[in-house]
Amino acid sequence: MTKRLSPLELMQQLVAFPTVSRDTNIPLIDWVADYLASHDIQSHRYVDPEQPKHALFAHVGPWQEGAIVLSGHTDVVPVDGQPWDSDPFEVMEKDGKYFGRGTCDMKGFDALAIWALVEAQHVGVKRPLQIALSFDEEIGCTGAPPMINAMQPVLPKGAAVIVGEPSMMQAVSGHKGGSGFDTHIRGFEVHSSLMDRGVNAIMFGAKLIEWANLTNAANRDAVPGTLAQAFDPPYTTLHVGQISGGTAHNITAKDCYFAMDFRVVPGETKAEWEARYREVVADVEQQMQAIVPETFIQLSERFNVPALSPEDEGEAETLVRSLTGDNASHVVSYATEAGQFQEAGYSAIICGPGDIAQAHQPNEYITKAQFEAGHGFMRRLVERLCT
Image (cartoon, rainbow, N blue to C red; front, side):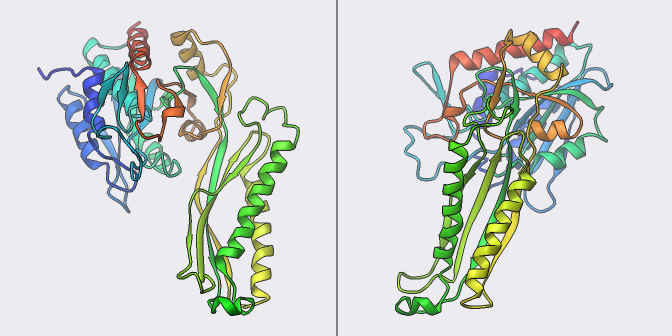
């Protein structure tokens, strides 16, 4: 019989695959599928039609609806330019911590979920357990919706989804919604000594970024709404993390590119913020076209992630609270795939090992104590499914 790997051995295997979002995750998915198959677990895939990315999902236990679904993503953020003290794609144990890209976000949870699925297969469970491993979460949660759509005609519909983003094993029942818009400003090139006759795409783009700065300041100073008060920060935030454009210091920039992202608190909608942004974009574009009519600003939606809303006696929250003993109320400002599962009709909750503060950092780590707490949670879950 094929050896059952420990959670640590599974995490070591997963971290060794450099599944940065810009690259393929297929070798990792192939390995997981082979490992599950060695324990007589059939897995299924969603194959992205446009890029070399696969999602994987599987079911153990009675072939019936009502499964608990363990959900994680397989992609990680880049390590480029980060000062790591060790190989980021090899788990290193030191000072009570496991270092490596994805140990915290979120291959540690993925390893625990795979362990639980195999364990459930061997002990025999009376209520089914499922796993769902997505891709492209780190670039806007774009891989989960097609995976969720692909799961439903293949597997019996699950009842409750546990999304294992790092939450220090707390039951997180709500998060902000998110949306982002790739913004392309097309200007008009002239020599910078004649800049009044050109349209500098970077400088006009800066007007949109300054609008974001002023809006953040106004939001910060306003009294937060009732629904927003629980969040940190308790207001909608606007963010630009990358910008590019221009060809030389003495030429007005012909092009400028950046993404404008919104993290929207409950009580406000992504549609409202999109409308506000488009209104400002239209005003700046009008200023540009008053100088050179053929200039323009083009927006394209990059991602759109629904908020996770706290459920009234939701099954996922009730289950997680019973397994963790956590009865406090928790919400987070980062977006996850939990809102997408909820939108598809699942009860959903966030609960996973590790501290989100370690995610995406150089020398990313998960503490041994948190990893072991996650293992204890999975043992209790499998035991619960056996009763």
